[in-house]
Image 1 (cartoon, rainbow, N blue to C red):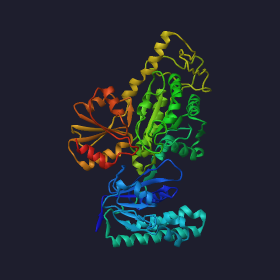
Image 2: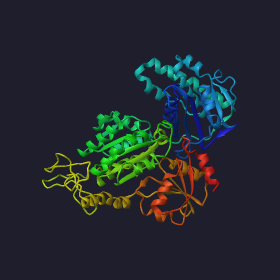
Image 3: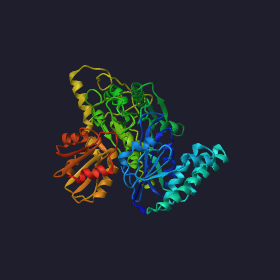
Image 4: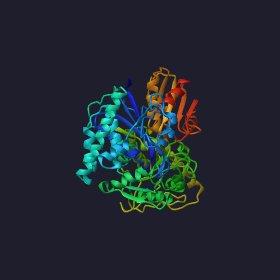
Length: 565
């Protein structure tokens, strides 16, 4: 007998174009409707057809948001999927695949699964994806009702015949799944909880998008570049509903400059990109610095240098955001670790950009943006939309010196003053200058806001034993994997600290880390955030746990790394 409890890992593997993502999308939706706690993440190659992609769907009793290497049930749509996932297949992995493509392949436990035959019997070979979802539900002994409803909703526009054929395919798969469960004596201990209507099943792109809309954003400019493109398409699909101007620029240089122009005119503007595209924006970032025009930059990280691994994940662009642009000026860097946090931080990003007239970077990554999980309504925070725009008078000076370094921000047409912006160094009214004294004062003015920004900076979230002597620090998308690893280890000498604001660092963090042995977990080669902590707070990092393969950290490897301390 095979008993599955607490956590089930289901993986679908196949070539691009075979419907791996379609299967996973349908399955997580149906499981959620049945009260299951689900998390899904995807890894795919940079090609439209072919290659080998996979999606993992986890069903867990505790809410989880991390990747595991273990596979309990593998659905291989071609032979290449077996080879691609070979090092993740263990003794307990049950492999479902067509016998033909698997000829000559050695697997631990293989079940000849007639996906194509069932699909053809139902009326069309394209129904094999529907067969696969039905099969999983049969294995797990989850009623087919919700899936039938899902199919009716999805294919209603194509007619009653297509709906009935899909439902027939689902039933064939479901029957095969129940039959396999009985033959293999598969027992699933995870039972669906009560269906919750206050939860929203979304991916990371939607989380960032919801936060952007809630912040009152009304302008986005971008040149498509994965994984940052998801935010562009999300907002474009909702542009009419929320009065958002969407500009698909001719390149990244045009994108950042368009956003600055919109912000100068009073819009709440954002650009979204990835590392290679952001590199082209650096002159524009400096322009934002000298003109003190607020703008939010969403940077979806992927492995570099250059094109690198364009569809994989990494956290190696922290230094890029930290040092982007020539000259010295203020900036803020945020990095959400959960979807609820992303919704809140996007609102905070616009709030800080407007209040401090600065550039705010929001760092995500491919793993975070393409993952799927549920967010409870009670987790979602709404922040007020404060514009920080003044009505100008005839004596208005855009860059007037103030005690905190923040000048009153006016916009053209609102009041009687002239709102000037100059890429040169300038005086209080915005006229260019080469005065050494004015230059010194203007540089100080632009940097002075770092002090209140630091005091207002978010403190990291601690989880695990408060008095633990070893503190494992992470940032961004590693929140879920560290939380689960520490939960598995249950060690009194280990706790976690997740940073969602990386720059500036709140001075109070120094006290939180004082006398502690610090371990930093991040997806890059050099430990960029570890170095930042050492430089800013003077703390000594005891160990760095790093990964640069293009994959996210798995729970197993973090448990192993921390177990070796």
